[in-house]
Every structure is written in structure tokens, then in C-alpha cells.
Amino acid sequence: MEQRIINGIYTGASGRSSLYDLSVPAAWRGALIVFVHGFMGFKDWGAWGLVSDFFVNRGFAFAKFNLSHNGGTIEDALDFPDLEAFAQNTYSKEVEDIACFVQHVKAMIQPKAIFTIGRLSWGWCKPFVCTGFSPQQGGAMGSDFGHW
Image (cartoon, rainbow, N blue to C red; front, side, top):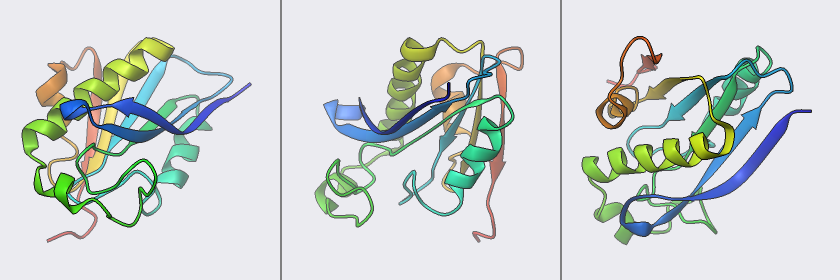
């Protein structure tokens, strides 16, 4: 049976909580894809739910999460209500969030390989900074989708 966590909570930079979704298919082959959004983004933006379904239907676990200082809150993740947290956001906090989130997910499902995808603001390469990426451990894909 497929395992789904919607709006789960992890603890990121500065002890700040944020939301995530995790889907693990019944026929999981051990690979996890982590989606990292970019600047002013959030996990439920755009077509990332469809992207999640695409990969889960092909045997991958898929996780997407909000960075802790993106301006959203646990109660209101979509409308950008916490401008103070957003004003305190830094690249270092985002990298810390990624490391915290990956460790959180690894403790739950113990993936054999982790792949990352992302968009904007270095979203596709931040995981390399905090995970010590090597080609033997997984991979990454990045996109800009028309952002200039």
C-alpha cells in the first residue's frame, strides 16, 4: 500500500517548523526524489503535485517541502503571512533546511539513493552543498522554466 504524508512537519533552520509531503509507492524500489523549491517558492506551487504523481507511479518515493523561512507558516503555507521570517532568510538557512529535511526523511524510510530536482534560486544545486553529493549516491536535475 502506498504511504502518503501530507503537510507533515519537520524542524529546519533556527528550530523553525515547516511543512512537507512524502509519497512512497507500494512497489518502492528504494530511490527517493527530493524537490527543492527556489526563492519565494513553496511545495504546493504549480505542477509539483503532478510531478510527484509521475515519479511515484514509476516506483520512486517523492518528497517536497517548504523551506523554513520562505514566508509561510504551518497554519498558512500559501499566502506569505510571515514577512519577518522571510526577512531573516539566508542561503545558509536554506542549506540547513535541506540537510534537516533530508535527515528527517532518511530516518523514516532509509532510501538507497537520493535524487534532487528543483527550480529557481539555486534550488537544484543547494542539496549538493549540504549532502556532499557524489555521482555514486544519486543525481540531480534542475530547471528554470522561463525564469529570466
